[in-house]
Figure (cartoon, rainbow, N blue to C red):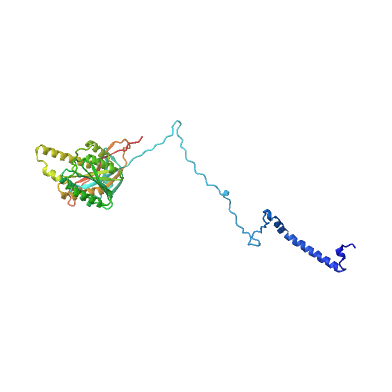
Length: 411
C-alpha cells in the first residue's frame, strides 16, 4: 500500500525489473537532452537574429573542416625605424650690419661665321685649325671657346627686282635665280619674292625647289609683256625681307638680285643701312643686273650719260655695302656665262664656313655696336701665308661680319 497505484498493479518480481529498466531509460533520456540542449536553445533564439554558437578548434587540430591555418604575423609598420634626418643646410653668417643680397651675372656668347675663300677660284679653304684664327672685338683679342666646321642646309630668300626697267634687267634676274635654284639641295629651305613699287610673294619657304622653278617660269612668261611699274623701291623691299627672315631661328641668307637703283622708297639709305647693321644672323649676298648694258653705254659722254653712269655706280656701291656689312659677297657679272660660277661661289660660301664662339671680355649690356675683325695666323702667330703646288703665294678673302649689336640690359 506504500506504492502508488500504478506500481500496485505490477506483479511481484516483474515490477522490480520494470523499475530498473525505466530508471535506465530515464538516464539515457537525460543524457540525450543534455547533448541537444545547445541546439534547442538556438532553435528558440533563431527568430531573435542570434547566430548559433561556434567553437574555434585548436590550431592545426581536427574538426569538421580542415581547421584553421597558422600564419606567422608580420611586424607592424610602426616598428620600422625611421630614416635618418637630412643634413641641415649650412648657414652663412654675414657681418653685422650687412644686408642680404643675391647677384646674377649673364655673360652672352657671340657666334661668328667665317668663310675663307681663295681669290683666284673662290674655293673654300679647308683644314684650318682653331689656332689659325684670331678674333678681335673693338681691337681687343678674344678667347675662342668653340670651333667647328659648318656644312649644313641653308635657309635663303631670293629677293628679285622685276619691274619695267628694261628687258635686259629682267632676263639677268631670271637667269641668276634659275642658276641658284639648280644648285639647291633637298634639305634647303628657299623662298622667292619680287619687287617693283611693291613686293610680291612668288613662293613661301619650301623644300620643294620645283615651286621656285614654276614661279620663275611664270615670271619668264610675263617678262615679254609690259610691266605695270618702272619704280624699284629696293630699300623698302629689303626692309620687309629682313623682317620676314628675322622671325626664323638660326642663320638666314638673303640673295638680292637687282639693279640696286632705288626710286621712291619710304626709307632712306641711312635708315636701311642702320637696319642692315642691326640685323642678327642674316647674311646678304648681292648680284647686280644690267652689267652688260652698263658696260656698253658707260662713258658715252654728255650730261645724261654722266648722270646715268653716276646712278649705276651709286647702285653698285649700295649693293656691295649691303653684303659687306653682313659678311656676304657682291657680284657684278657682265655676261650670262658668268652666272653659274658666281652662284657656285655663293653656295660654297653659304654652306662651308667655320663657326667661332667666344665670350666677350666686355660684359656690359649697353646695346652698343661692337666692331669685329678676324685674321688668320700660322703656328708662330704670324699672318698666314698660303701656297699652291708650285710654291706660288695664294691670296684669300676672309668673309665675316664686321660687327654686332650688344644686348640691351632690361631694367
